[in-house]
Length: 268
Length: 272
Image 1 (tube, rainbow over the protein chains, first blue to last red):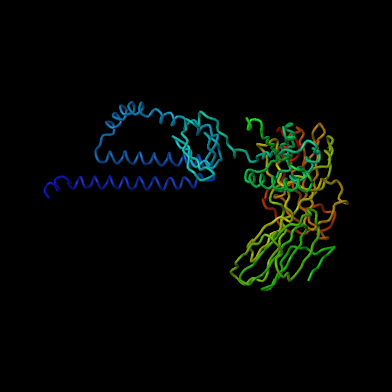
Image 2: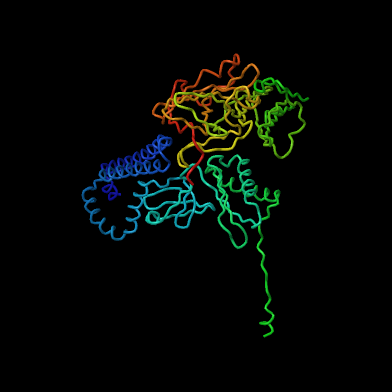
């Protein structure tokens, strides 16, 4: 009992209480300030900038809180910082990859090729950007998988941002028989696009003869639509093309395979 | 009971519908069904395949809502409301109208053209908006110098007209008079026009035809900017007008300046 009393003097208990209070206030302040800042920035900046600023402020307040708490319990921060300098060199060698990702992350945030909620394709994955952090970006793929791509990889590879611009072109490919009237087919396709309200009237649809293939004439028909209507436009237009081709007696060529049985080799 | 009118009464206004009764409106291509089920209102609608359908029919006591085409919505109301309101509103995005062929406005001269845009129908009960639907759903369109910058609009299925006398009378479309003046030193070629529909008020003339505020576009002398002015109402020659609905987005009626290519286009070509 005497040992305990000598260990926890009233003064030490007071110091400990002050430290706990500082930590509590610091954590609460960080949460409150971050939440308030998030609301303030919501309509003023992009979601990505909002997140980065909130995290920077949050961790800065936590760092200050921790520093105050350590000072309160009597630790000399200059000694800690000196040790941190030596430690940084050691950690730097060990965490070369992380440092590279960190620097790449800063470049990525500066470049602003994409942001949170954009749909991007990178490193063989396609999905919605959930967060852009200092070490990696996180994606939610369309089949609801979570993918973490290191920033270094993002910076050194090609990234396709599918939602950067407000409108997008949907390319549809088809093949028709050689004897079909291409002018009539163009008119049928143009009318389909004209009647579909989610296909943009302007820019006008594109009809392109791609070339003469083994089985018929290869065609491309491209319509423009908004980002939100991209998938509905693709689906409805393809369904309407099939229907309109059937109504206008425009058959789509079928693949015919002729299997020749080599009797002579069998007999041999 | 069905009533079809050649010189129709306005389809907008306040209407009584007692409990367990239904009604159907044909407003141009729009078929709107309203059923008062006491503590719940059912609203259904669909569009006919004829975009320039101009019939206006009120049919009461419709037994059931027809077919799969109807989009049906149910609204639980707190009070025993027996009245609903139909409102005519301007389109919720700008509407682009095209000229049959590009027209030239010579330097220091002006032209007056007429543009037709479909109106939107809003259904309200107890001042609460229930649905808000186009009388005809126009195709989307992009208006801008390229595919990166611009504005999402609707495209009008009717062409720019140059004479007021030949304007067809349609119950679900509003006409806008637009005056274009060219103060530049070279001819102004116009292929399509973007009408800032959400900024315009809607009026009705003595024949119950809908009009929007008139507006004027004046090409500045430097040739790249345009001054736009919203008039106090539609053209005054046809008699007194009544206000039907206010603009969706209020802007100052005073002149405001925009880049000319944000309003008028000389061609429809984009780099692919």
